[in-house]
Length: 141
Image 1 (tube, rainbow, N blue to C red):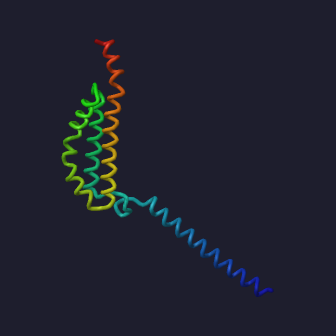
Image 2: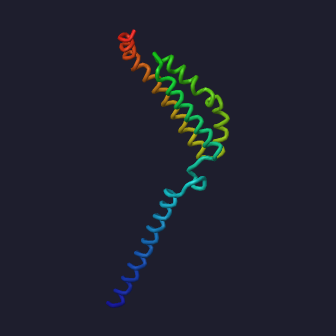
Image 3: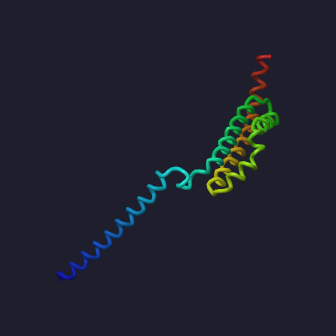
């Protein structure tokens, strides 16, 4: 009976030790992914790509600001496109720089989604604001 207890203790001890090692290993790996920074973590694009992405994002913001005062949707879209044009005309060059690494490709896709969402917002905003703007203008003019 004493030998059986000893075997049970050894088996449980080995099990607890292996489980603890597994848990600690997972915690360390997750912490390294969460708290690491820089290009070594695989979460940041190259500096040249990041610069291009910042330029494209700033152009989208500038386009949104330019389109905000447009009286109708077509004019809003035109203003948006004109305001973002300098950087977005270089988009293929920036995209070529960013496709050198997987993170840059994902980042470029995110900027493209931002642009599409902004275009939709420009059109929707101008369409919804046009009647209200005309009403305000009727009191002013």
